[in-house]
Image (tube, rainbow, N blue to C red; front, side, top):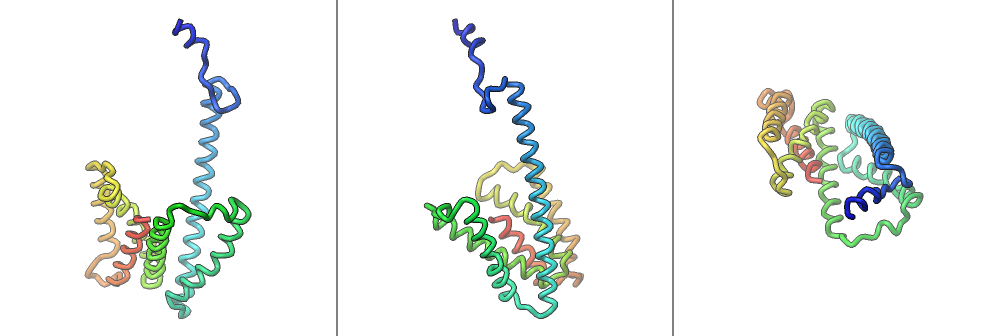
Length: 195
């Protein structure tokens, strides 16, 4: 009797009663669309971050101070954020049960922003960007230490290779990159990974 019931009962699919294969194909298409959307958004984010880095360098060359750049970056962001919240989920979505965690992330994010902007102001833009690529290295280390994520020898090998690459780029002792700028850039990457 159970075998007969198993043949007669078809799995329920969330996509309007389609058979399992059709449902799987449709789900794959939706996932593919989401991947393309995600890739597109990531490319836009990279373009925006690159533009922001270039503008920070430009205003620094014209005499702007780090605190001034940070202030105006936040002031110009507020109207866009408020418009997005008002047009989307609404202001009620800003309520939270985890105020302490949000405050903690805000402090870490703001600290990371200070160091990121500082690195761009202290270093040539290419070197500041290169040092920012160490964030995944720090994320691997922090994931293993804080979250107890399993990290095999391949990942540790990649971490080691990444740090060797950083040493090659920064050339410590050569005077190519100021030590202060390199430390600020690495600290920025650490805080980005911590977020």
